[in-house]
Every structure is written in structure tokens, then in C-alpha cells.
Length: 457
Image (cartoon, rainbow, N blue to C red):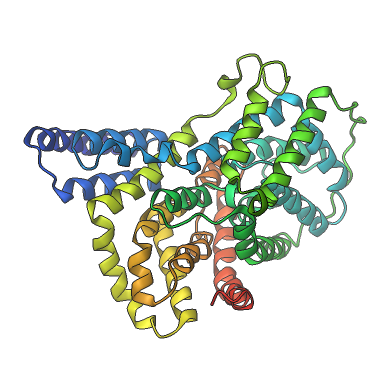
């Protein structure tokens, strides 16, 4: 009954928004209430996933443009910012990894080393997942790449479907490729949305290397170590994993060699963007251009069919939502509310930083990790004035907050992993809750110390 009831309610709400947009268009009005309900409905659709994310984004685009909520360039600004193009380049690189067979070769290498005691297996698989985040910018793409790879590895290692050993391997790989990637600028959608909004709002986008320095030591590396520790304790009853039988891999094909060289060059340019000044977005797009070029052998003859456009539209919708929040005055209104919350902390830079991170973390269960930067970035100047912190510190405090994930649904890649059966629901939720609690208790103070060491607090 719920399966038929929910879509009807959503359809009715969308129709009501459409009618309101048509009336506002006909009268030429500019009611802020239409903007509020359009943003609220879109965020709820993203949070509950009752319809695909890209479809919710399309609803938002149509209602806002038809209803004169904001000019079309504002509503569609996500398509001109860097976030959508980072996701596009990640999708292209991911498709190339699969087409050339380099992904299978990486999987074979994982199978060759991921054996022995179960803590050792968890550690190697989690480190492999984090390493992949440097090679492949799209978090969703890495989930779709790793899920079958890890499942095949578990089967070869004798870890049956539904077993605790298999659950531990899947959690180590998929959580290992998602959580530490919050400290790598182009590697997850929330990071990309934050970068896109920083550019569209004129607040200034950090370079790849600057972002890495600020966040990866704690949000990335320390989070990886914490994840490994949590999983080792959770699955301490699982015995050693034998080395799976596998044939020696064939020699690298021409396509694999070309892609390996391309990935090495791309990562090198990402790491040195503070020297050459080319943003991570356009380094990734240059790599995607090489992959798409006819005759390179890095993609099939009709390469665009291999590219997933749904995540691109989703990210463009999130960035556009943030731009609309700022343009319509909703951001200023929300800023006034949040100012009351953070204003008492204004005397202490550390308390203000932690308080802003707590605000971001609290919004996560309501609007998902992707929605946090969409809401908070446009009002960063207001929050900066209330706390006395630099705007750059206010915007970067979000990373500590939205990287603290309490439940898998907050992160679309993890939600998809649960839906396709790659992650057992009970263990995925349990690991998320434990990791979030320990992150707040252990990593938040460590992050404050790191920022103090850098002279940013």
C-alpha cells in the first residue's frame, strides 16, 4: 500500500508546485514562498529518494524557471560551474577503466594481496578503496566499479553471500573509498558541490593541494585508520582468508598502458595545481577529452553511451538549489536563524569552528551530505560576520560536518550500495553510527589541533 501511496503524494505535491509556478508566471509575481516550497520539496525528494535524484532536479529547474523564482542562468548555474564537470570527467575515466580492462587488473592485484588474517584483509581492501579515490573522481563511479570487484573477490576467497566475512570486505572497500575521499577535492559529490558554489558565489575555490592539506590528514587519513579499527573490532570473529586461486594476468594491453600513463599525468597535475594554476575540474576534463578521442582505444566507438549523465544532472541541481537559496533571500533568512545559534560562540575561534561543523553535521540527516554545502555556502558571509571567523574558514568548516555521516542514506553512493545489495543494511547502519560517534569524539578535536598547527585557527 505504501508503494502506491507515496508516489501519489509526491505526484500531487509536484502538480501543486507546477500550478503555483504557472500562476506566479501569469501574474508576474515573485513570492518567496514558492521558492521555499520548491527548495523544501526538492530536498525532501533527494533525502527520501522516492524518485530518482535527477528527476527531482528536473522538477526544481522547471518550477523555478516557469515560476520566475530566479532567472534561468541562476537556476541552471550548476551546469556552468565546476562540480558537474568534475562528475562528468570522473564518469568518463571510470568508463575507460572498465573498457580497457585496467579495472579488472586492479581487482586481480587486490585478490593477490588481500589474504591472511581478517584484520589484514580489511586493511588492504580499505587502503585500496582510498587509493582508488585518487584515480577516479566520481564517488558513485567507484561504488559501481568496486561492488562487483569486491563481490567477485569475496566469492573467490570462499566468503559466501550473507556471511560476516563478506560483509566486512564489502564495508572495508566501499566505506574505504567513500569516507576518506571527503578529504580529496574532486573525489566526492559534496566536495564538488562545495567547490561549485564557492565559484558561483565568488567566495574563492581552494586548489586541489590546499584542500588536500587542510582536510586529508584528518578527514582522510585519520578517518581511514578509524574505519579500519572499527571494522576490525566489528568483525573480530571472522577467521583468516585464504589466498584465492587465480590465473596469471595477461600482459597489459595498449589501452591499459595508455590509460595508466594518462592517469599518472592527471594525478600529477591535480597534485601540483597550485603551481600551474589549472583547476582540478579542467585537468579532469582534459583527461576525459583524451579518453573520448577517436582512435585512442580508451572507450568504445560510441563513448558517450558509456557516460552516466544522471549524477551530472543531480549535482547541477544541487548547485542550482544553492544559487537559488542565495538569490531569493532564503539564504539570508536561514542565516538569521543560524546566526542566533552560532553568535554566542563568537568569542572563541575554536568554539565557532566546532559549532559551525556541528551545524553542518546536524543538517546532514535532514538534507543529505550533498545538500549541506548547497544550503550553508551561500550564507557563509553572514555566518562569518556572526562568528568573527574568515569566510574561508567558515566554508571549510562544512567539510568536517558533512563528512560525519550518521546513516547511509545521507550519502547517495552509500545509499545506492545498500539498494543494489552490495552492503548489508544492518551492518552498514551500525558501522555508520559507530564511525560517526567516534569521529565526533576523536577526529573533531584532532582536526582542530591540525588547523591550529597550520595557523588557520
